[in-house]
Length: 187
Image (cartoon, rainbow, N blue to C red):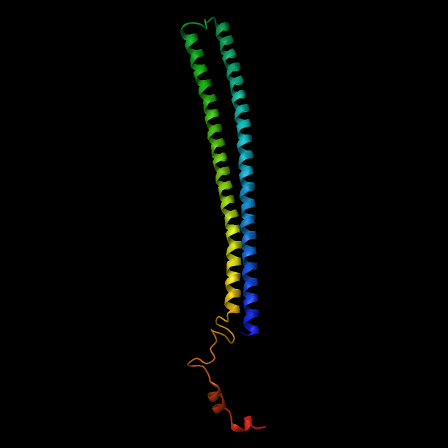
């Protein structure tokens, strides 16, 4: 086995390990980014939940003010709010206010679910990237071991099993001497 073959195997092994470490670092970086994005989505969900509660409370207060203003206007006009047309108008306003509040809640809940689903997806992608980092490292060590084994066994380079010396089609020593003038071999 030649030193060249050993050196080439060591260089190939080091390159495989370096390549695996770089791929692992990249996957780890992507995992960290996915985890960060998941946290951002969770924070967005919490903020939207708080906004929805506040919007719902504000809408309920505005509806109550509107209902009070309608009752005052009816009382000033001499309309009895507890019967007939006055009662129907107040009931209709109450239903409309309730629908607005439900819509605010529905939009909030769907937005919150969307953010939480995205956070779950981001966390899952992060786990996949973490597994890829581990796999890249393992694969690089396997590749490095294979390079070292083939280099130490003389696989394909140097004077060993895989050497081209002595095989058909290679230049033999007798052929080498035929191509040189005989004076080149005299002392």
